[in-house]
Length: 171
Image (cartoon, rainbow, N blue to C red; front, top):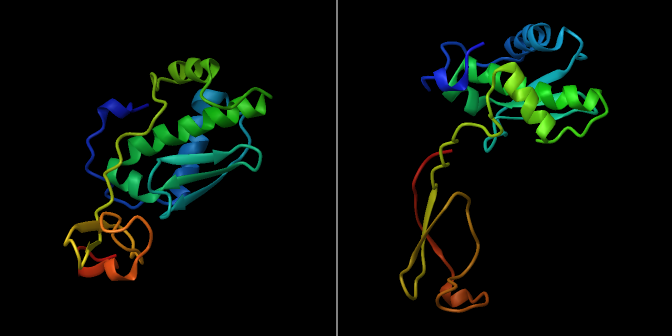
């Protein structure tokens, strides 16, 4: 099993797919859980951007971040799936499925060392630049806003309404 420390964040030659994730899940289930974990539905999400993956053990649904795994590659995809499988394994045994000491012990056992968190996720770029018409202070945002300058007035005041100066990046 490739460890996250062996990674070179160059991305995958092939895009992340649910089929690839399901195959990794089956292989990891045989390798580390004697094939005893139940099947799990795996979805690849374009909306999951601030974390590598998430699992809902009761419904056996795992969501994996497309952007994160295209950035870090297939080895990190396997690491994330394995991490989420530990949550499922604990749940299936009727144990607390959070990041407990038992969770950490199993992380060590499967070779993930102490990987409780995902690798760094690059900050999303700012998309818009706004300027206050009164004091000329500028604000960069990721979403369009409809507000006024807090430096000029503590409550909304249309005289100090931010004006869109330019769009910094495309969607």
